[in-house]
Amino acid sequence: MELIKPDLGLLFWMIISFGILLFVLIRFAWRPILKALRDRERSISKSLLAAQIAKEEMAKIEFGNEKITQLAKIEKDNLLKEAKEIKNSIIEEARETAKLEAKKIIQEARQGVEHEKNQAINEIKNQIAALSVDIAEKILKQKLVEESKQKELIDELIKDIDLN
View 1 (spheres, rainbow, N blue to C red):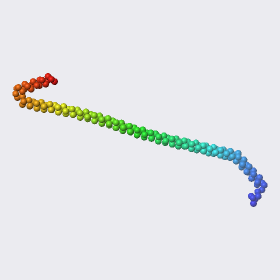
View 2 (view 1 turned 30 degrees about the vertical axis):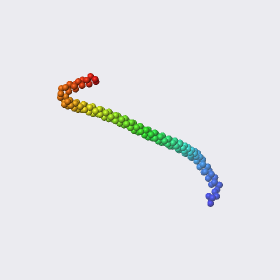
View 3 (view 1 turned 180 degrees about the vertical axis):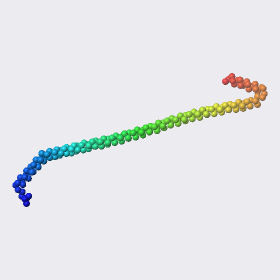
View 4 (view 1 turned 45 degrees about the vertical axis):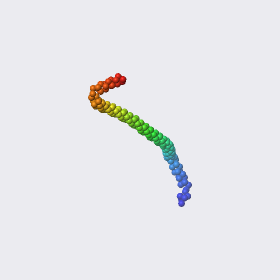
């Protein structure tokens, strides 16, 4: 029961003990504790600021990544479009080249056919001429057995030569 109803002496010594403890705490512990709290507060503030900066940088990076992705897509589309145009131009150029080659081959074939035709016509003319001479020779041999007929034929031929 004495603890419930403290004496005046006990109360005095308790206040003195508490005062000494408070003095020791203020003198030796209070400043380091406050310093630790301030350091902790600064550390937390710095961390929050760093987190905010990191968050902003991440947003910038994400925006940059989106922009880079969009630019890459545009570049890809441009490259594909350019490749298609090059492919189409190469195909068209090949078609034109093939058409020119075909026309050239056809022209050469026509010239070859024309040349062969002319050679064949000349050969036929030569053969006809040779056959005509042979036939005429045979006919003349039979008709010109007599000397008077020969002289008449010679005279006619000389007249024809003079007229031409």
